[in-house]
Image (tube, rainbow over all chains, first blue to last red; front, side, top):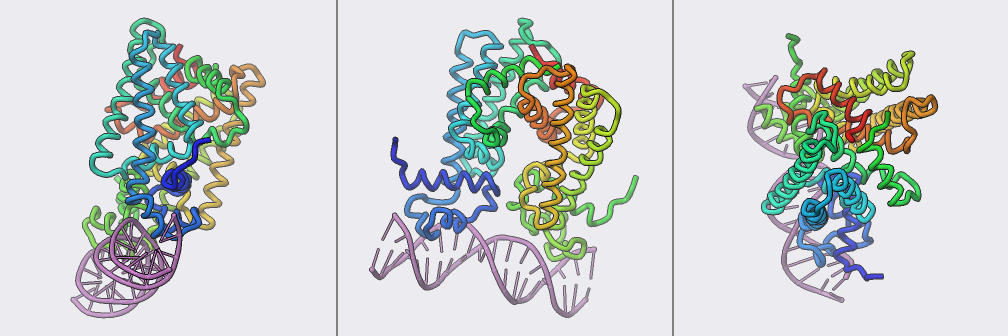
Length: 189
Length: 189
DNA sequence: GTCTATAAACTGATAGAC
DNA sequence: GTCTATCAGTTTATAGAC
């Protein structure tokens, strides 16, 4: 039962609004109204609108980065690693689906260092993902098809989980992981 | 070699900008600068910023709707129908990848009737997709897994094609269709 | 078809009272 | 911690000259 700081309350409320309309279309007045205060009062807790966005996105990106680093440095085979990546995305989505909307759709509105930092993490994440698939193909754990399409289609699905999951009612995380692994890795035909 | 109307040039330029920053973050001055004219001059060709957005999105949504209607009313089996849906998405993406960014990310900024019209088309599209998968499971053409996850993961991948395809160099549409069908329907393990 | 000038509303953010 | 008042800049869009 951790108590939230006022800043965290603002960030959480902002994430919901950003999800609905996007960062640029949400005004500080919109956010203030949602919080039941005036826009000027927000600035006692945050420095700028931009700070809200970077707080949401960078924290999530670092979560994915450290999760991926653990998976990469483990001694599992390629299929097990892919299963753990699926599991990582489901865990993060269940914890903060709203924030993932900003990470997916509003990262380009980050400024300066945070934009570069984010783009580096995203690139590294994709490279790690690609290397795992490539290794799996090399050792015949994965059908060779087209590696780029496998990477793209799997990541597309995992990145869009934040939109789909909230619409499912009372879905169990472990069943979701099992079904997701089945559909993404084993096909439907 | 059809000649484009000035309005269509504006709409095409806008689609590229909307893809990069989103509808709300693109100003009429941004668009005018890209076109090499002043913002006020744009209004000789279009009525409003909103009209540009609806032109982009509604045309694409109607393309998907009529394509899906053809597929639904054909007498093919479920797998063939899914293959044709994949083919439909690839064709539309190759023809107008920029516009699909707006359809995917900025549809919520449509106003009044156009918003309702779009939401109806999207809902019908998803319902048709779901029915095709359901039928395929009933007649044992498709592994039963979890129908909702199959619908979600396939649509996620197809909807994200607009981001991925432009980064691939010189990819042939027919090879892409074959590979996509293979990965989406037949799995990777 | 494009321009300059400008209206009217909205934006993120600050100063200072309580 | 929230308020009122306000600033300086930006936004979409219009009017009218060329």
